[in-house]
Amino acid sequence: MLLSILNSIFCIAFILFAYVNLNDSDFWLWVPIYMIASICCGFAVFNHFYPTVYLAAISFYIVYAVILFFVKDGVRDWILRYKRPSLVESMQATKPYIEKTREFFGLLIISGALAINYFFCGC
Image 1 (cartoon, rainbow, N blue to C red):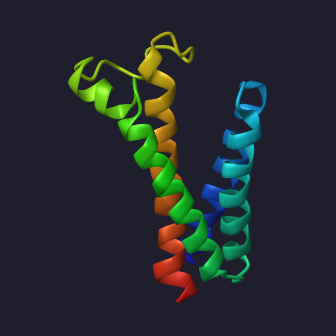
Image 2: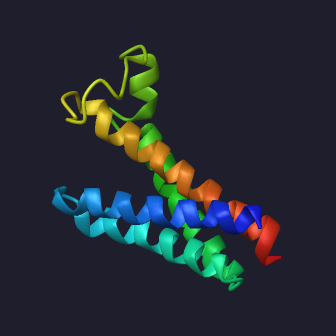
């Protein structure tokens, strides 16, 4: 029951995240990223689990998160070079590190949601 509620919340949240990314310059990447996670969580609400899809998606998301961590003006630079200023002062990404760092944490959230389904529902 708790996992169904959690998956419902994740499903709706990821749909909203995909919608917000429609006006982004890289919408072609982020809308599918969020929609795949949303669909997986939506299926989990109805007790349909696809562990292979979870693993494939998590693998892609983690690899992409690692890339965003080490890329120029990525998470590592946000921590070391820029000294971790706020990422949520405004919704506009006015500094070069903001978008990459937000995307990094979004990928971690998605990976966590799918990992919950993989470990507690699908296997």
